[in-house]
Length: 433
Image: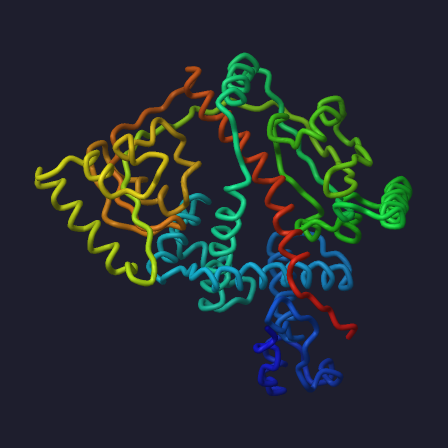
């Protein structure tokens, strides 16, 4: 289990280069050392300092006020431990991102932010990262996102009844819908807490409330005390509609005013304080929809990526040549049990709900076009776009939006819960250095 712990010690010059110190500053750190163990991997002093420098550079580039070094170190180390555990899980499940897939993903990220890939790279470079470090950072982020998605997906079930009800509410209230800019401080307790654990959590949350009343900014309190993965970002949750807010907090938030701190609220994970930064009217957006068919092939030791891609190329050629129909081939070959019986049909959907590489593959396809084979986190696909439309006000459009909202709310709740379970089930040791 601990086979990777004893890694070769870095040279002094390499350490100084990694952490950006001069010789005088580094006199106490002439030898790299293990500061934590996450699963079967050691986290070195140089690993942590590299991440700290990256965080500080990004924060400065975004003109964010930096918390104390102690707070940064604690939060960055916690994030690094979780990141290493997820990447280990990805490696065990052979989840990899090829250079070609990474290039596509980087282009999509740049497009989504209204810039070219080179402009995005330039912004990253301004924080001191090399091109290789930038690519590796983005690659890791994509892999982590795919692992989370695959693990959390099985936990989420949104019923048609829930979707229909919310769609009707959205359609009726769309002109008056509000968004809430929120942040959260979470204090965790065990699933079955002892009286001592419950008492400790209550004392801690009350101490935080006293500090907030004494004038401590909520973001600083979150960075210092919150036990959530977004603590280093001040617990910021962004702007959410009332339907995207977890149910345990939605009612209290709906009654709050901008500037209020709500809580403590008891959740299944512990105790929460919520800050309402701002409340604003939401501008309804047109809903893009796409209707597609797809064929999914899964891979294994015998049927590998090369074999899957080759088979899909042959199937695609036969469909384009008129030898077979797409829907017949989907019923015959597709391993997506939810759509294969219906000829691979995925009815009108918002493209945002799809896996990023699936979404990218259909982005520029015209109705009737079939994609080249591509790999997503589910396996290998070919996709035919049947039709596209922009729907502003039908109940079907609101059902798509409603399912997206309900899914996102569940993902937000379950993702952090899954991370906590992963940490609880893994070997973690932090050394007192």
